[in-house]
Image 1 (cartoon, rainbow, N blue to C red):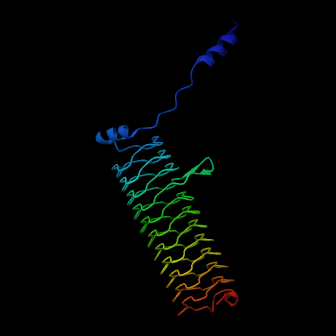
Image 2 (image 1 turned 120 degrees about the vertical axis):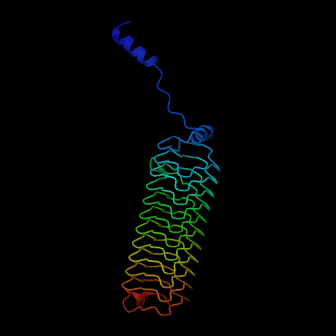
Image 3 (image 1 turned 45 degrees about the vertical axis):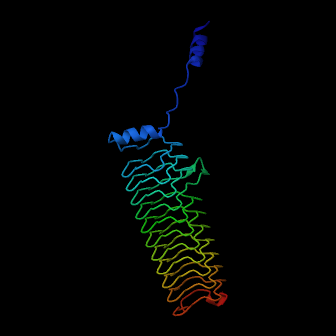
Length: 276
């Protein structure tokens, strides 16, 4: 056998190094018992962490693909840049948790995460990628969602008073009966959103995109819609008392049955085309 053949044969016989194994629940529990709360970058794929106390644990860059975190406590935990594809946080507590730039995108495909009825008050979700995520009934009071991607996300009945959604992508999101009172949605993309019965009283919607949004019966009392784009939006039966519509584009907006008391349309654009 030639030298080249021997080298090739040897390389073929060597087994490839085994891929790192994901941590089990037992291994995570052991680390916590030993006082080690650093799980940064760890592979927790498919791990059952339901009901665990992971408060203040560092999970930055962790792989939580298909992990079960239902009912877990993650208050003040750090999940910056974590892979949340298919992770389930139903009824988990993430009060003041940091999820900056966390994502549920894998190889360009969406694997939605679930945060149904989760407690996420004051959480930091700046730049988070939660396309199609289920956040129905979640508490996001005062949360920071600056430039978050919530495209087609389910936020029905969610509570987001005073949340920062400046520049967020909420295109075609479901916000029926959500509480967004006092929230900052300046420059947010809400095109095609479904927000029937939503509470947007006192919300900042300056320069927001609301084209073809469904806002039947929504409460926009005192909302600031300065320079907002509302072309084709449906505001049938909505409350718009004292709302600010300066330079807002109202082309083909449906205002049938809306409460417009105290609204000044003199500086609005295309109001003549709005359907009364």
